Length: 337
Image (cartoon, rainbow, N blue to C red; front, side, top):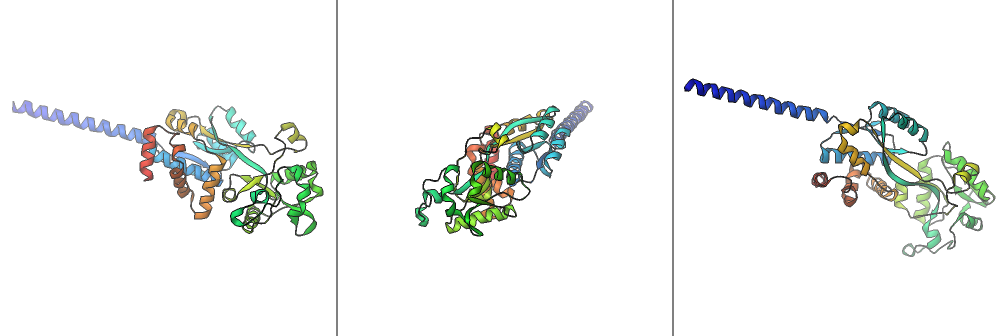
């Protein structure tokens, strides 16, 4: 009986050891399958924040580690095809249309929908120029200014300090596509008779001119785009133009800029290795207004993208909790605390 019992004990120990080995192997296999997810960093402030938001949700909600790798638009598309890059949170379709079409044609890249579909390029004046600002003691300067048709009679309001016979329009950055576009628009609208196009030397110089005028309550007329930190800090009125029309745009640029759509992409293999992540990203969607606010927060607080992502997650809980299943949202909320 004693020998039999000893055999039974040994057999039990062996079975237990085998079970533990199988469990360890299984855990190792699961961990190995969850290799770090690679996100493209194409250099925009917005993509820095979006990558950080995704990284936080992936880690705390789904158990995935992630990393961001610097890459140009072209390198990003190549990486998505090869699988060296798993996710691109922000492809600007209008400026990368050909690269997008080529990568999608391979069948190795997924289009997961828009991140935000209302990015804007336009002409602006401070809203107080039209409506005033009672809190700052600013009275309306051009109460009936609404569209490009109203601009000729208000050129003196925006007088060019270097040429007082015309108004000043703060145009684009030298070397950017919008320099030529704004020039053609002015010629088409006949505004070149009333305004000079002034080219700031850089984006900081352009935004600084807007912010300086805004702080003083002075008139300012110029080109800008959204989402950006500066548009999250100042209240600007978008000058009305004829609605975008492709034929008009191609011929004279005599209409509004086309709205820019930013697309989320993924390597097709992610559908097999992490289908829950693909589903999460299909639900991911923000707005230009939200991005303006988070970029303004970064600027005001001198916050890095990770801190801005936490601010976003805490302030837009109702939004992002709809992107993921309830159990995942619960884990992310717990991590935020």
